[in-house]
View 1: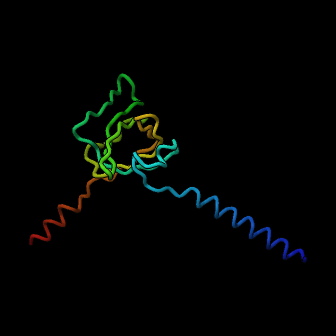
View 2 (view 1 turned 180 degrees about the horizontal axis):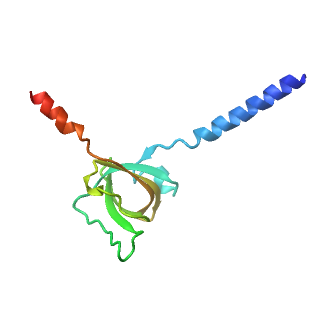
View 3 (view 1 turned 90 degrees about the horizontal axis):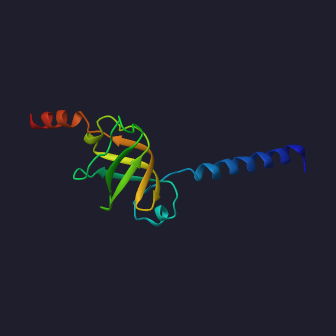
Length: 130
């Protein structure tokens, strides 16, 4: 084989390896009761804040402990522990995405993303009524 063929094959092999490693990083949304969550792997869960349950955050006692209850899309409610400060306007969020692991009955979150209500919803409703 020529040197150019060997170099081309090595380049293709490296490219395939990079693509396979990138495909493994794609995350999908799970529920608290999914089998993937039960294996203790890190997952993303989409849900809404359970407004009937308490929000536990005392910045004077422990500013890096925030506990709340999240209801996933299937209706399962779990306690979520986030080791960080409570996000601003957390109660106003429409949807919440938490990334973390299920340990026992508690979800240990490493990240919290929120979808806040859109300011354009009211404007759209006003223009539709005209």
